[in-house]
Image 1 (cartoon, rainbow, N blue to C red):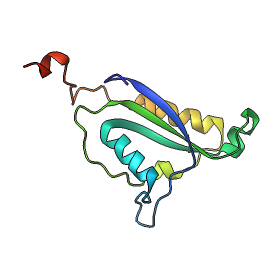
Image 2: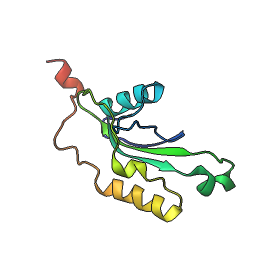
Image 3: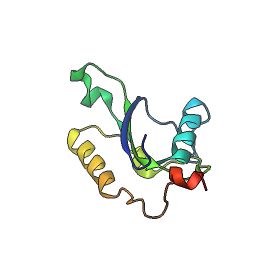
Length: 122
């Protein structure tokens, strides 16, 4: 991914959280720790696959992860529950709104600048 690139990733399942709002331990938490520490995650949208995508051949829950570029320096981050991530999207109007809301608030990347190849030679 380019430094200021954008991505939308679709993966299966919904994110499991414990009673304290922490992502449950396991492979998913390792994946999301890596993702959150290296990339600007704009939103993680849980989608009801039974209602939205059964006509397209899937009938299991999925997540849409929206990425807004790479971080200049990896930061240790531990994903905790964000309240909107608890709301499972079950209609296309709500899905459209979540995606457009995330796009509206994407960072202009003015706070962190990525090192250029010429910076590394100094």
